[in-house]
Image (cartoon, rainbow, N blue to C red):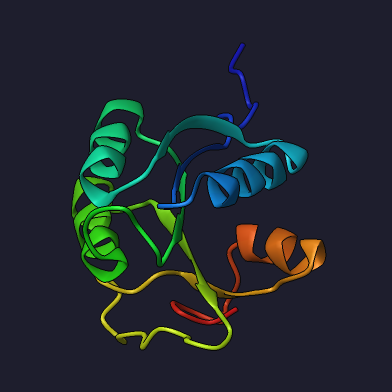
Length: 131
């Protein structure tokens, strides 16, 4: 008998601010994601990705160390199938490259609604960088 149960959805959270990490972790758990780890900066986040092989990375643009754009590119190299959600303030949205290897799947602008977060978790036909 073959088990057809899909693998558990797992995530890593990266944000320089502890309150942001707590918020993102809570929202992920609310949507039944297992949070394998949290990081303040890019280096620690990449270590977690290599160790746990999550299906999702939710990263804030404000990291304690490193840049979010470099993190996205390095995370994609470490785990090509990783879904990446980048959270940024609406007042300073990041420039998104059309290059799939360096672009997040979704840019989620703060403040956002829980429904918008839930929609960002699901792959769509909109393509990289589109909410």
